[in-house]
Length: 308
Figure 1 (tube, helix red, strand yellow):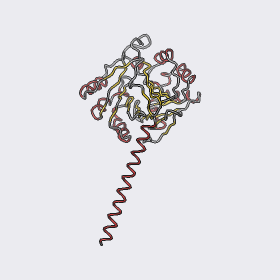
Figure 2: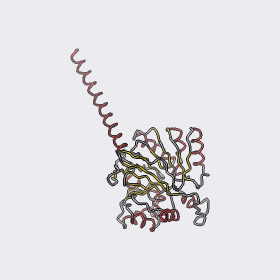
Figure 3: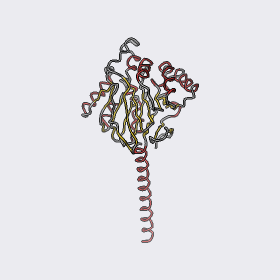
Figure 4: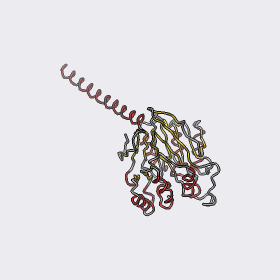
């Protein structure tokens, strides 16, 4: 009887040790993925939502999708073990980008909110974001062309940098679109780059062709390989001049958030990318996925739901 109890006790101890070892190994794997890579998760929600794990252990969110899919976004944060968001970045005020920012601020530790300057912030969602930030003592930083969100630094001997291309304080798209319309608000979207070593990603929000033209007219955009499709890849929202310019540089991958928006326009955009032999991933076609780089080799991609 004593021997049986001892055997049961030993078996339980062995099981507990195996579980703890597994947890430790998972923790090590996640730590390595966070500290050795710049990883960008495109989350399969309505709208646009990106979770960025910086190689210095910091976390950034660039947009977070629609309110109806909040649980999907929160579950993804939790699956990655994220409890603090150092940089909460909204590209513009539309609900399919920032409608859950208030709940992120109320449920997670947030280091700071970053929102483009010279842009409308008069929507209900923008008001909720500002109120939640004030309630939780989180500073809202209004950023514009030439700024950065975090200080450029070196990680693992490799440079980690970022830069805001748009909007600028003097940008005025009232001659292109009627103020207050969707296209007008979209034009003031944040256009922003993160670069690790020689490998960069360009976030474009819902920037419209005039804003795209303004950006490529001012900047070379060298040393970037990945871009997010402006305005979810609505075909009429992405100019051929913009795509020509990107491909004349080193851009070779596209991310299309919420590709399920439309039955004709977005497939038309994908067809344009196919014609250009430009690889892309979309939440509509691939679900939640990630791209990542170690700063010394080109971006790799994975469509596994949980990430590295």
